[in-house]
Image (cartoon, rainbow, N blue to C red):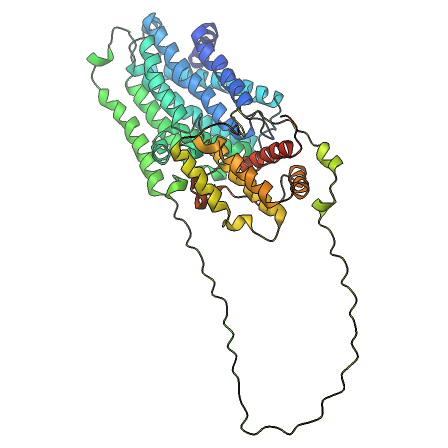
Length: 483
């Protein structure tokens, strides 16, 4: 145990002296956090819905770049060749290196958590579960880092291999881009990347159901980590002169690939790949109104005629009491003027609105015309509750924005025109003011495929926030205010 702790301390000290390891382990995750904080600055709770992604990036940087970079650079400098002369088993040295890396990754995660809390994020709902999930994620990517260190012959090769895994996992693996924003084929491909399960497990403990809602993801991460650590141990090299291409036993890489394929195949088989476009649309229900049949029976013998009754005096009923006004009808222009009109710019990433003179191509124009025509018969736009109708129509602008579709900039104009044509300025102003003051009330829709816009938003709260912003933007236009 003394040798283990001695090497553990040496590994930590060497890491803190390695500038490249510090860059990937600490600075790189903080850069991502700053970028996410700017990109999602209009979220009600900053970074909360994306903290699983940020922690995954932190583990990726420390395990898939920092760990193999340290191991390979030490191997090139002959450090591990000297360790081989010590009367210690290779497993002890390798285990202390892994534990040291885990402690460093935990420190980077705590640094990221502290920065996120300082920026306004609330504390995770399941802190103990978050630590368990973080440990499983660390195990998965440390195993992958050991494989990279075993395969790469030098530090540039580590960078190349790391990027080949890191970039696809960011873009189509569900780490930096939300799965709901990806096309159908990319969502299926993401099932074979451990980054997807890392984000799901961590996010479930940040603001979800905790570990009970991430059992499959935890299983996938543990299997991936165990296979990676096993293969990395089998392929471990002491000397830089032992080139990977020249040595035997390369087939130990196969268990890692087989586990990735098995996890992805199991996810597909169990139907865990939630692709909105693949979900069958519900068949419309046809309601047949009852038919009244009037039957006229003519008597064969006419009854005897009786004198007409004396007409009763006409009594005029009292007028019905006036219908009480809805709460939103009691709002005044002072309530509208007192709103917080800080909204993202129209040309930004969040809640964009195209200018009136902005031209669109023919295909997009046809799609917008179909949406404009579909709103006239859309059931959600014609309920008995006018405020709810406006909420639904604002969702028509919010859903494409949340999914980040190319048409997202132009649909708000269609919705604004429809609302201003359907309601008077005074009535629409009051309803929009009520929606801004009560953003959590009422129902929303996160799928408007019946209007020709395919895709479902994974987080309905995102649609509420976008609807809130579009309500403010329409109020600005109704009152001739500049944004």
